[in-house]
Image (cartoon, rainbow over all chains, first blue to last red; front, side):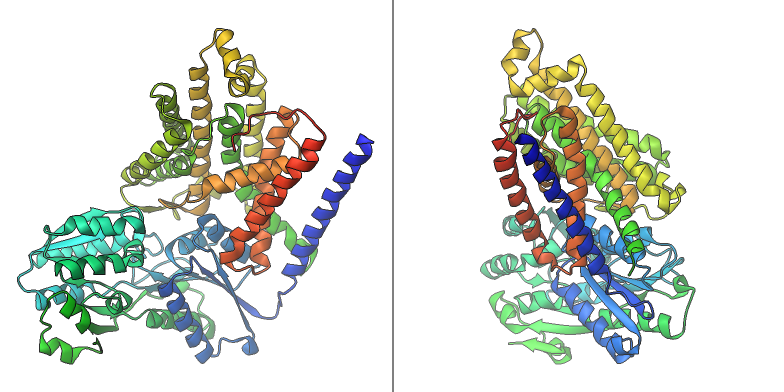
Length: 332
Length: 297
């Protein structure tokens, strides 16, 4: 009786295994060999990455890189899980895709490790050189190139000088565990110093610690500055609250934070970063470029001034009229 | 696509699973042998990757030496966790939580930044032809599993197992049960760190966030394996750890191929876990077999 039971279990496993393999075969069937396949590996669901992908897809559509023209774009999202990002890349390599587009640093780094032959176009990388994706921005080398979303830091730090000329101490909440933060702080620290400002940095490990960290800066800084840090940007509302309560001007780097209550910024347009990424992709296919590493990294230069007058009122700031005139978008 | 496309896919699943199976093997030592729900591994995986990355990128250490160093640092981390519990009398869960938290800062200190790239550093894996890689990685993992099996069957190994199931017996036999806990956690975290170091060369980078959610995935793999091959002997428990790791990765692979939205991937894992646990509780228990190992989680 026991033996029969055991055999039954074994048979069940066997059937399950066959069903699994069947499913895999079925799933792999979608490939059409005549088409050029582009694999898109996005590291996580993130408003800025999504925006960039949208820009890229629109540009590809415009340039005729579409299904009807013999291309097939396969989109995968790693959901912020690094082993999954690696797995997606090896799937692409196994499928022998014609190009991998990697949005986000972990996706891009593992794509470069996964293949030395398939062209890799990375997008939305703050510092491609420090991340090891490019030998230099003018000539990345190897099989890869892409775009950087480095913010116009000089203009952003300049804003502090213009709006709060008397400010000296800049309070910054940051997550040292993020590679983006590391990259953006490199520029920010240098620029603050050359502008005669002092940075006071408070580290956090996750977004729930941001409010407390900002609170601890009250009285120790003249203005708040939010760097390109996803953890802190995710908790921007808690810094806005503290800034408003204590009349501390809050500066941010991304447009979205200004909409949520920071004073002003020269924002990078992530849609445009995506468009630039799409342009590189189209160029490689259309001009049949084999030396992909010879295409320079595109750094977004298009910056829009955006000002939040409601925040200015909350934080007790008189916004200079000249700036308001220059602004591309004013929130009232 | 023909059946030939399955082979490269299986190869990448085997590669990733072999790397992560060392973490599951580590869990066997901590969770199953001495009954210590050790959360340190959530960070010591990254510690291994960090030590490996910094040694390779700045000290140009030979890869094998860097792997060894990573394992050693992991062992030290595990020892600290065990000491907190054995000598400091802090509860097991809390000891793990403390070390997990402390290691986050230590990892950042080791790397000096949050992400080190190793894309162009030579790794041992690069010398291998691609089609040999899954065999070598799986073979390496097998060697560790074999070593563990051998070790657990020695006199010392039996003591280790007794230590989890009935600690007072160990004490009555005149052995120090605290020392055995320290040993088990050192081994467990050394294996986890080693796995992290191998992952760093396989991924091409070391990142502070690379071990997020590791405990859940390793435990899921172990439970999945246990549901399939009921661990009524030591051999079958270790087999369960390996097969579980393979299946866990396979589920992800299938999920990705079936275009499951990444938001829902964890639901799939949760469902699978629940089903495995039910299978384990009903079918395996109904046979009323004596199972090897303690069940802390």
